[in-house]
Image (tube, rainbow, N blue to C red; front, side, top):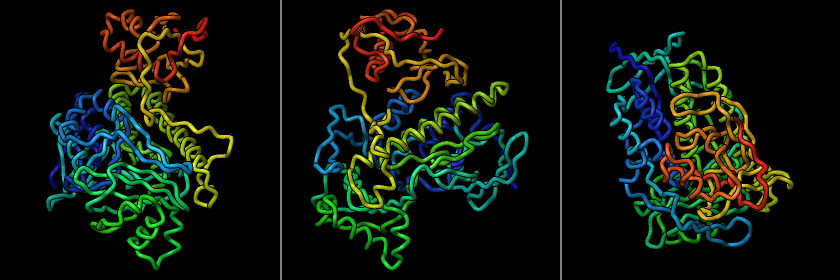
Length: 475
């Protein structure tokens, strides 16, 4: 049997696996990435939320995606709260992509950074010991024995490491099919219907993907009907279906598990889960790919800490597990509120809706940040709270003063690679974004400082100055 070794092995070359592998290679590790399927391969998740490209840009991977020329999203048709509306984003920050091409672009970028690739190949965990892992990798008619010191599980819902997981919402299935025709809808569309909700996505190649999200029991209880018959019947009752009257269904209709969940053990001394192998969000957020990439970026710093600063491993593990648990719970509450906003009373909706008192809020990263004027006088929000917590640094998890604020996702100690607490200690009531950027430079370049000031103002960390500031920054 052929034998290989690597510092880090990664199972799964979706967005999470490729980004994680690329980051670990950039941190100086010998990385082997194992992918079961040949690329390009079809995959759901063609609508990408606005926060994804800035994440990829921060680690030098956005150019690989940009070269593919994917379509930007400016308008989304919505029929959710009983009226027909159009959500407009003048900056077109979201993307409509061919996931086969998107995933292949990220994989190519990872290989260009020195990641070794075994594809198509199936990885099986053969043994686990104090020094790492032993995998048997089947591919090309042979089995390779791969030893590694650290394992990243990015195998999606298959979750090759197994383990217990907790559902964060009712069991949900997505029935989906691809259509072609002369008059397909030109915009994405979301719609609330009886016992289901609908999502339509125009693809770069001219096809249109329709998804119907239903309770899993509804499909199980009607075994006589084919998936295609169900999809056609349910679409016929929707406005989305009316736009497909002259269209032809291409390929088989498939059913995919869309239940949100969180794995109980997302990180250990010698492994980390990322992407859907760690948690899955309710598809209503349309930010699953973004969250997968976010876990990959966090996991690379956590893994670097575990491998190079094992004495700080407990804090790194605590950070990662708590961060994912917080994200899963926050998105669960957001989804419950959004289901409640549809104001439907059947069993599908009541099982997913929050109590009436719940606040309907869009999680950070889903709603595009508002751009405040740069000449508005600002002050530090009184809602800022500081904790000494394990936080993501540039390369390691470190104990730093971390900001908690209702407009910011999770505790934040760094922005753009710069420690946040010293920046906010320099804020004086009445300063504008331009004045703050000037005060922060040098060593922070003016444009980088202006970008950070705008980001903080868009999320309410810096608010309009109307009197004495009440926020205090931790030392």
